[in-house]
Length: 239
Ligand SMILES: [Mg+2]
Ligand SMILES: [Zn+2]
Image 1 (cartoon, rainbow, N blue to C red):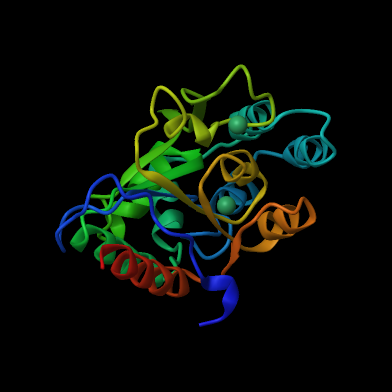
Image 2: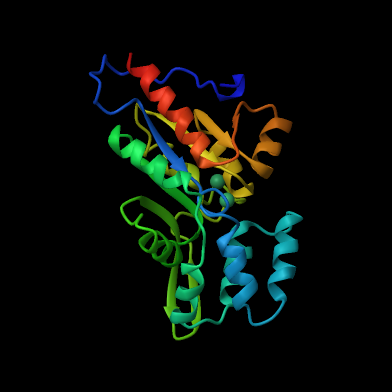
C-alpha cells in the first residue's frame, strides 16, 4: 500500500473486543464523491428555465456570493414535474465502491453519514432507487410545489458564510463525541468540514486545495480504494 494510504491510529476509548464499534465515524459528501459526476449541476443544467444560473455560478466561483445565495437562486430557477425529475435521478450512476463501504462499516458497527449540499428529496430518491435508503443523510431541504422547487437550508451556519450546508456542524460541539471523524469528499463545499476532521480522504479540487494549504489528507480515486484503506485501519486498530 502506498505511503499516502497509511492512516493514523484511531482514538481508543477502551480496549475493545473484535466486534465492538471502532473509535471513529465516517462522514461522506455525495455529489462527485458517491455519485459519478455532479448530480445537482446536471439537474440545474437540464431543468433551468433560462441561463441565469450561469451568472450565479460565476458569482459563487469568484467569491462574490456564498453557496447558499447561489443555490437558492439556481433552484428557484428550475421548472420540473416530479416524474421528469425522478426519471432523471434514476439515471444517476453511483461509485460501486459506496455499497462496499456501506457494507463494511455496517458490519463493523461504524456510523456512516452522508453530508451534502444537494437536496434531501433528490438524494432520497437516488438512495432508495439504489437500495441505499438505510444510510443516514443530511442535506439541504426542498419543497416541491407543482413544477417549482422551493429550497431551504436547515444546516446553514451564520458563523460560516461560505457554506450553504455547513457540514462540520454535524461533528463539532454540541455534536462531537470521543470518536475520531473521517471525512471523504471532492470539492469546494468540503473544504470547511475537511479543515475540522481528524482524517480526510480527498480527490479533485478538495485534494488540490488541501495540498496547497499543506493540510494532511489521503488522496483517493474511488470509494473501493477508501473501503480497502478503512478495512485495514479497522483491523489494525482492533489488534
Ligand atoms: Mg462533491
Ligand atoms: Zn462551513
